[in-house]
Length: 327
Image 1 (cartoon, rainbow, N blue to C red):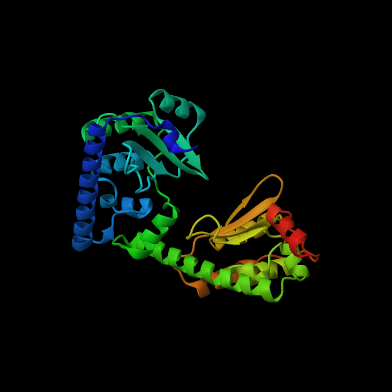
Image 2 (image 1 turned 120 degrees about the vertical axis):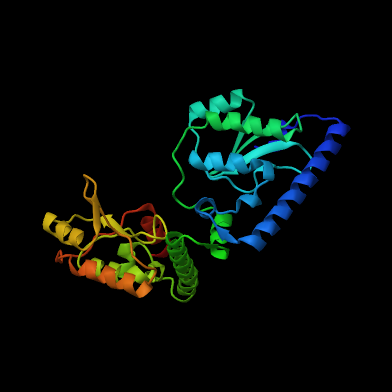
């Protein structure tokens, strides 16, 4: 749905006031960003998680952004006046809303637009008074469910680029940054490897057919571990960086005996299983060192006994699609 299907009519005087106000806001924001970069170009915890300096938002939205952060909402810097011609206000970001909340917002004159998970809440700002606009957003914040303070970094592409560019003084966040940097380099390298493999030899061998991926698609720190597990008879589906840049995991359709789970637990490995026997092996590396992570995975696999049988085929949708396409 196009946002301008909701366009209100406004007179020429209002349009002139709006353009003047928008220029003033853009000018103030630009000055604030330049000042921030000169004085302290490092991130606070909130800015690291949100993926933007507070000064990157339209100035009157700073308090709004902070309050939303405390309630569990990460807001994109494109929020605010979302048009150079029409006085629409929007809050943009990756967040979910339930049916009841949507109804409450619509009763307050707030429209909702959703494009591939990127959601916008917007309304027509009839009164071009920033204090009134801020009060409107505060009313909207009261409607939004409290999801708890954000703790996981935004994966918005802009936020990821922001964290690559700027530095945090928090040692923990600095470590997180090193993991993100390592993951990014791995993904770029894998893309090149996979592209080359598909071009030179797009025919999977039997192991790749069982895994449902080319070997080049397995991340380097976990590649040998996955192949060893396959040789031991364990069917795996996902591996490596899956949920975030810190945690490492291998999961698949296999069961482990209690004594093996205990051994893994003593080695700092978390084992999660559901009633059907689907199992996940998970650990959090202490440092972003590819060699040490690979060594840890090899130690883990060495604790797993051989099943003395051929591993089953991975039956994920991705694996099935892989076999349909390449076999």
